[in-house]
Image (tube, rainbow, N blue to C red):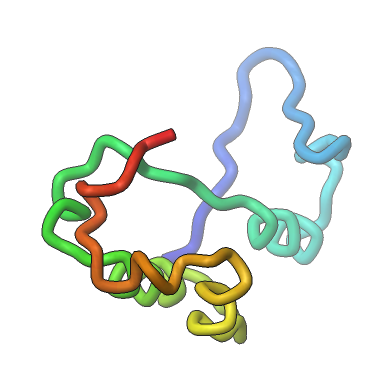
Length: 90
């Protein structure tokens, strides 16, 4: 689903040091790929395990990152089958 940048009525928008309104469509698309979110207070995560969530969020992005490699690099293997709501939010 394409994300559109809403028109402002006042002020400026700067992201990563760039004026959003002065960017070309291609530059905006590249900028959008640098943005992500971390959702903490959601309910569906409680029923999912860490690995399942990694796969879910991986699907949100056009990424070639290997999930197993990321889990190894960040020492998440012991948490692979742990339910998300059992982890600390910090």
